[in-house]
Length: 200
Image (tube, rainbow, N blue to C red; front, side, top):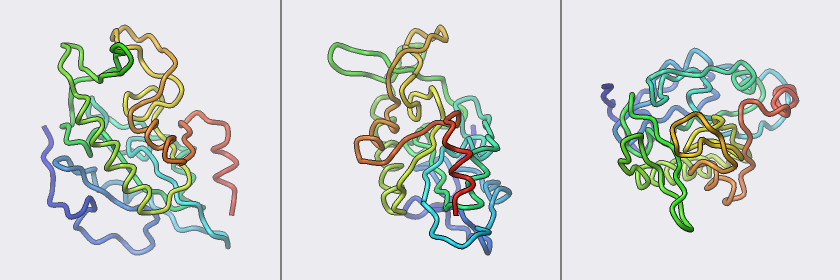
């Protein structure tokens, strides 16, 4: 299990390299890997960039439940024109990496987030969502590009809580919180990403 490095106010204490376009972060107890620096690019066109909150796994960070990343070139390309703020709500909620997979289970009029054994992780997911949203708001993010299907970051479709690979309509805990706060939420498959990468 990975251990966290020292952090202060949710931001890595290490100095950021010159020209960084990312806001490197750490979780309550799990630090997002510093390799995010390999994806940093300077804006190359004149214009005011939109700040975008991005799931850290899409930038190549190994912070998914299974300890892997899901780097997405279309998302990474946004760094050429926009300031990206890396977030991982599950890590920010204090969950370890790796960790058991979780899914959203509808419970009466509400929802819970549980792992395959039924262990409830709802409060960790909610706390991580709050931390991620606070950071996005601190950086005045107007948009979030979050990992599809995730119980934290999924938008419009998530796994249905049976751990059978079945998708259903719904929103991840963090994605819903971002949406309700007025931040537009897309996933990595959104066709709008290519156009965003080209905007000055």
